[in-house]
Image (cartoon, rainbow, N blue to C red; front, side, top):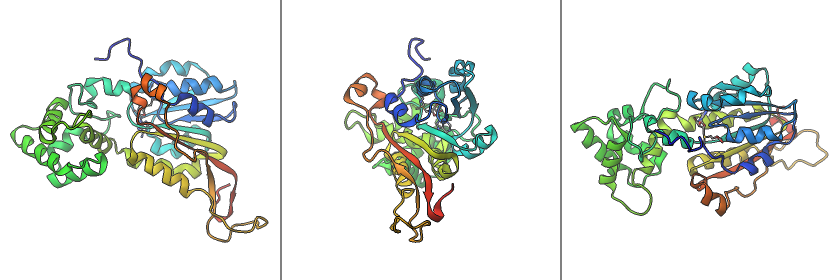
Length: 320
Ligand SMILES: C[S@@+](CC[C@H](N)C(=O)[O-])C[C@H]1O[C@@H](n2cnc3c(N)ncnc32)[C@H](O)[C@@H]1O
């Protein structure tokens, strides 16, 4: 159970997010990872009466927790996956947005609720689905995947250097009894890998399973690929990542969209084959201050990147 006095989630880098995201108080903004609505509330503070905010989350519990926001006539909340943002915006009749925020990963509430199975610190069913309608749970993966496949998953999604050892221990344990709780898995991984430093030895294995169950990287890739479609000219995107698998993808996608055009300035169209449509606003990744990290340990690994769509795309790669 979650202690009733614990906030749903403390928004990370909140001031930096609104400063970078909100350029037009009457614009249309998307919070693609609504959670408890912490960032959404900050965005709304900056919007005028004609501004609008669409809040999306794939977890119905998050939408329920932020339901009070929908009393504001500027707000629309809807269930969905930000990987489907182009379709969601078409459905809303928006087409494109002035600003889009993603604050990736899980919320503090999802981690705190033992019944969701996200955390090795709380015993509960080995589930990890953000959207309870997803077909596969973490228990399904650890109980059925071949050992080599589990090792690949732990290595690629958890960046666990001793992935094979962890996978071997999981397969040996499930032969005796299939896994059904987070506690059982945390114990088997801890016994196999041992304690080395402050991090729980099952941290990376849990991260890997969560990413796989929720197909998190696929959703992020689809989102990044849809940016030219969903960002209005002059509009902005802000993404907060919590591990390098996400941050690397965001950094690369934003960089790839920057113009490298070497055509003369007077050329009307780019003919050099290096057009672009985005300007990166965060030359250096933005990280929380020591003070914020001390106040909110969940902020420790946060990395923020932002970019703005050029008002006029240069050349044949352009959309507007
Ligand atoms: C870190 S929390 C966001 C917290 C929020 N910014 C706040 O201030 O309260 C991430 C949220 O994104 C949701 N989420 C993760 N992946 C998603 C996806 N692909 N589509 C929609 N929501 C997603 C999770 O369910 C979770 O509620």
